[in-house]
Length: 205
Image (tube, rainbow, N blue to C red):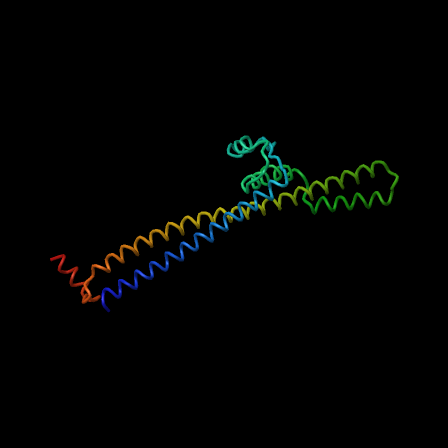
């Protein structure tokens, strides 16, 4: 095969791959923009204000600093959602029974009250059990929703990195393709692939 033909094929492949990477960068950047805007819009609409303190005396320094820096701000990022879900809701929910346990306790208290509906102690116990169940349900539901938003946001961050890598790869391949095209123009028409080892051998001698 002639060197010019081979160089032309390699150059063409490089150009095609660079175009593919540019297209991938554009799509990944669109994916990042979409997820980032959606998460910001949906979280901001909830008007959840981040506390300045988690209430956990054993929180690590990074967590304490995060809540101090974001305290009294309206939640708008996936990272804020994750920190609030794990280190605020998660901490307070850890001191409460699981939803299954709270549900069982509420049913038991309601059953006891049904047997003696006029007993003040059973009324208070049933009310307390129902309140605990509602709190646990709302807390776990909100926590799950916020962590889903965080996962969606994190996928956008990965897409952002992928877009940058694809863009840089496309630029690199395009530059190499241009260099290959310049080399192609300087290659003699009669040169073949087999001339390359002899050329290199002559250069060593």
